[in-house]
Image 1: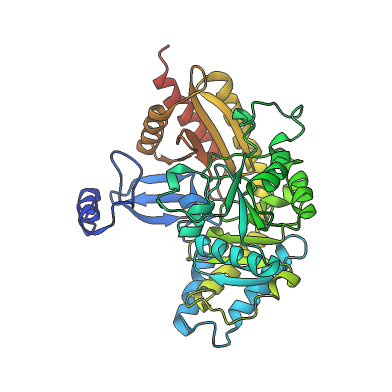
Image 2 (image 1 turned 45 degrees about the vertical axis):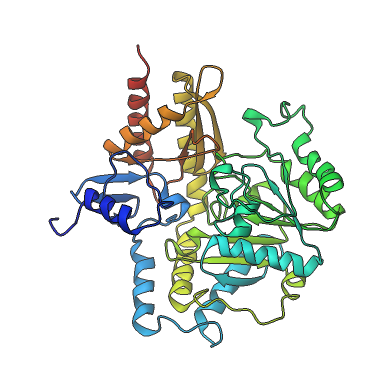
Amino acid sequence: MSNYIGPQEILRKKSEYLIPCVYHFYNEPMQLVRGEMQYLYDNTGKEYLDCFSGVSVVNCGHCNPQITEAICEQVKTLQHTTTIYLTENIVNLAEQLAQVTPGKLQKTFFCASGSEANEGAALLASLYTGSSEFLSLRQGLHGRTKLGMSLTGLSFWRTDSAPVGGISFAPNAYCYRCPLGKQYPECDLACANEIETIIKTATSGKVAAMFAEPIQGNGGMITPPLDYFKRVKEILDSYGILLITDEVQTGFGRTGKMFAIEHYGVEPDIMTMAKALANGTPVGAFTARPPIADVYTRPGASTLGGNPVTAAAGLATLKYIAANNLPARAAELGKVLKDGLLALQEKHSMIGDVRGLGLMLGAELILEGKIPAIAEIDLIIEKMKDRGFLLGKNGPNRNVLAFQPPLVITENDLSNMLTNLDEVMSSLTPS
């Protein structure tokens, strides 16, 4: 343990050598040094139950032995070429994705991150449609690149002072705080209907695609009603606009199905993914229906996209997900977690709303009058960290507790976490 430099020295070096936009959680952060399935360990040996999965990445658990073995074996033989040479893993992974993605999605381009995947999907949509404008949702997050930031509907992440033009934002399906002041289902999906108004009034009519996360992760676990995307797709189809679903956080079993859009009975035209596809090995990809994919014929490459090690990790990840039926496990344990959070909501008025699907859940914390509980959530996640539980936070006001644990977590783990969360919240409320 003495070989570790410790949190304070990391903070010193971080301040001196990293660009300051690289922020961290906690007033008293720990140095993480090891991971094992649903657990992480710091430099003192303290164990933490990870309920955030490195932001929805390690669905199969930290250092999953089967995936780690596949990575190590591949590193020993061929670590890197690039897409200009033929290797087997990349085409095998693309074949597997064609089998697990919904509808007629079939052809894939591999890259190194979700931001890059969304950039590529936007390019493909423009090539196919001949149009250059885009639609996006308020509170969506689609990347850290210039276009990705411009497609993002969260001011927290819109760092660029000169965003890309030609992007129109539609109200999201945030039923707890309806942007249109209505109530579901009496609203008749007014937020979806507004997309048509925006197309008619705020665009030139030359819209290539609409970007949408099935559940908005950073936006605060915003989970649309189950009939929402059917209405959206009907509107888009009537104007020849493609639907690009961003499954960077929601994919690979997290929501109780392989991909979250499957809950909504809609087939996207293009799907982007990253994060959990390779369980922590950097990866990004976008997949499209063949008629769309086949218009991209000019030379394209990604130096690191789909390299042999990444593709081996992806193949091992898909194999583990299938062998252990992780989507069904996420659905089952998600119900346990959601029921537990709803029980806490009955006890703690600070929990204003509980939402999400599977093991992608959020609890929005509020004060009287639905005022966002911004200071309180920071105190809660700090106290939970001290007790050995790592939770996330998101939303426009960063007041939504995020629960995105590895899908290998157990019911006992969730029970322990809920018990501690109850105690921490009780300690904030005078009796």
